[in-house]
Length: 404
Image (cartoon, rainbow, N blue to C red; front, side):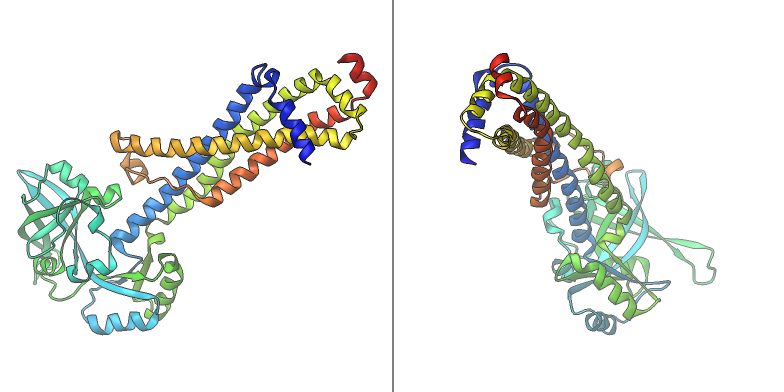
């Protein structure tokens, strides 16, 4: 085997092969195909991870909400959740309210989310998403999404009014207006474009006072030991709590997106793999020409006692060498493309948040992706080089000496 590789490398790295014909271009095509595969898979994996991180950072691993009415007994409710699911690490109460943001004659519909600030650190991971100011949700202080801050040119310590409609006590179809002035204490990148455009965070007590719901709340955000256990934990909680409650996992919030990405990953992989296949068969055609030019060398090798199988292995070894070199160089270039993609994202608007729901993707190169790309490339190169190798091994010594 060592002899086969030595002879194969000597024949492969000759001046005639390295600088002649289409061999360099074929090899370049293989390298670029592998690099494109690595970069595209890293972007798709990063998209899923970025979206998953946004879900768990802002809404926890699970959301438990009571259907049709607010929850009022916190102690018994939290105790029942802990008893039903032992993987629960911590919980935090929250409440929602549709509101109108008013500032300098401009108004916009927003979603006001009140959270228990004292329990926030154990459930959510919002601190790392703060772009300006400090996340202090006390009294009349609020945090706004980055898109909302940009739209209204909001700065730290700016004042805004939030208005909510409340039903009158005697007429259910009539509403009265309730408003309050709040101070912007932080601008947060929530990780999703629609959240950045609409979400406003406040202390739970401030929302309860504004909406006059007393000490009641919408539901709880739940933190698990492992966020990947959310589907199983959610099913268990739903069975225990009964039909009066709704349980949503981070996956359920964007189920259609996650399911679409699985299909898109497979489609993109096979489409980009076509580049590798074309490059490999270009190498195959180059090898046919190379074998034709090496008839005399093949004849000499057979004269020295090499069998047809050994000659075939020599030329197939060239395919293995080309595949290894192309894959390794392609992976390195693919890594560089990932870094270039991240750099361009930081300086230019490459991704439309309104289309992709997020405006920045963190690339993630997974070992399983690299393993699949490596194996696929080697198999393609071996198949592509088998037929010219077989043709070369069938050459008769007399014919080789005559045509060499």
